[in-house]
Length: 311
Ligand code: SER
Image 1: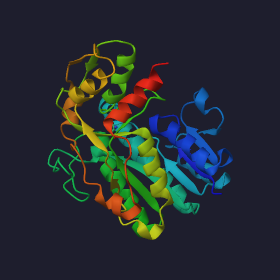
Image 2: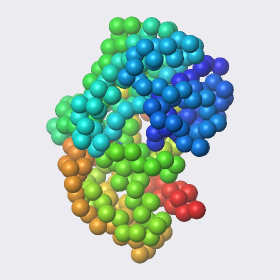
Image 3: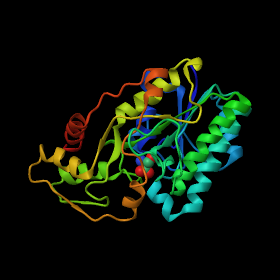
């Protein structure tokens, strides 16, 4: 079994991905790391505190622990990034380059790094966004994702490092709280619904964004990383898609469970960010190269979220 390192393991994606990797590859083969201490639900994991901005520490951990596969998730999301642009750039870029260099220098077998719909911008074709198209991101997070994709491709071309990546849509999950993203309204809304509160939405009611249930995102990640090397034709980052919704549609879907639930709309700077992102993506390369199929549609996601938060 290969020894796996997950950075940013305490985040929304990291905490669920770590558990899925442990189930698939054995708890003893997973080392989780983060800048902050893990919460109780991650206490079963081997944990090593890691600041991904410390190049030497990243290199040492990978070398000493004989890491063969890295999932590098430590990053700052879009909305948080806009309040601290320079910090977001440093964390997202230097963190990635530190991991890529340490992986190259220690013969790591495979690296995963998440990109995002935020890598696109307002001149991108917003419907059925092609795999290769105009990309002119307007947030520092998006700029770091587009640049990061190109760094990943550069390390593949130049050093033969097997780096793989997905452009995640907004991820909906119940296990960890929302973490500073523009798509996070689609998580917070469920917390309001189960508490019988009116939801105050920071997006306009008709702002449409692509979304995905976390289990699909985790499965996509594990399937991409397990695919034979020769099947991978995209070395920047694969478009990945499930369903698309507006806040109004999500509110209506929740009202099928809680008829008196309602949302009020107070669009702020996050709505301007969301309006530069695609409505839905053409993910046919992922479907063709490694057989990607999403499973969760909106009604199932609403049901699962309400069932699990309502305890
Ligand atoms: N979900 C992220 C965000 O909203 C985008 O990748 O920041």
